[in-house]
Image 1 (cartoon, one colour):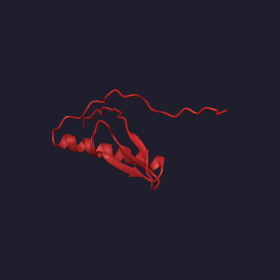
Image 2 (tube, rainbow, N blue to C red):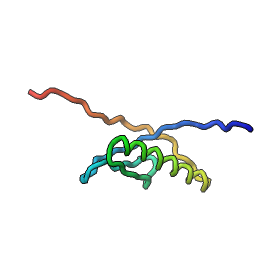
Image 3 (cartoon, one colour):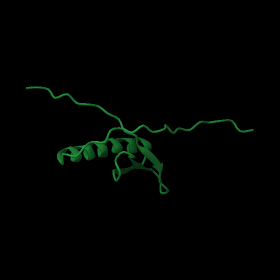
Length: 82
């Protein structure tokens, strides 16, 4: 049995705090691909699951998988206030 090599890629996900709690997750490179998690950790797990399913569906329909676009990294920087 021949082992199939898997290609690993990463894509940017946007974790937006929801008003009711938890996080809405979307992917700029995959419009319409969204999910939600009650905690940040759950949101990350669900994001991986939904993106893998989305990509599987693209492959099954013989559609092109988007390449990762170059985007700025957004992070928080803490500073002391006077």
